[in-house]
Length: 272
Picture 1 (cartoon, one colour):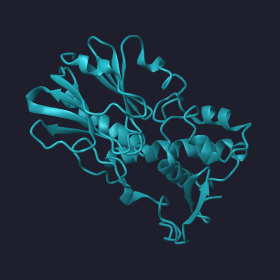
Picture 2 (cartoon, rainbow, N blue to C red):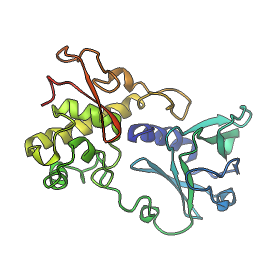
Picture 3 (cartoon, rainbow, N blue to C red):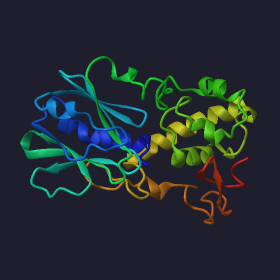
Picture 4 (tube, one colour):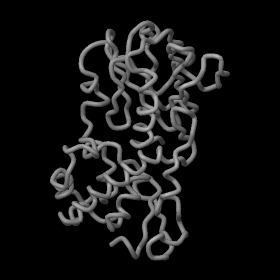
């Protein structure tokens, strides 16, 4: 699933092609996504993009008239810039025409993503976005926020930092990596993690996410960026999908288990 770094990489890739430009056409080839693509989408041809934002794993495209688009890439989705003469693929579900003979293509083989139109009002107040927690790279997320979320919870710390109401965008890959760099075992009860260790965890989350964005995201199965190129952060992963491999710090074999129905990886020597 594309996580925050992949979505931010996508945002940065498509923004130069959209900002201050109008859609020349919009074609919906498949409406059956996680939420049905509304009929009003095709009526947005001629509307100009005023901003391309991200909130958690959602992209928000603000328009000069007609509100905003909310886009989620689901499990396998991507947004790619292509030439209008390039061959369409089977799962290119929504095609946005752009000036200069370009197109923005929403591609989603599993159809778990969404493309919605918020006709009026603040898109951040949409039910999908309203209850999201703070952005992990913003000043709104710090150890005091995480401590408040953890102090009465016996759930494993990994599950707490993956809770989008606590902090957005820390998906399975980056939760595992951040806990490794903070030296915390993923199964540790959240309320038992001390404030100094939470300080280290917040710093690790920030560094891991920022490094992944810098590398263009993590390619595991489906993710490519807006130019169709893979991300390269996988080459820098310390624990995720490295079960049995030697720890890059101490050489001990990386452990693997299922926690909260998600694959979880850690080093028993480096994480306590």
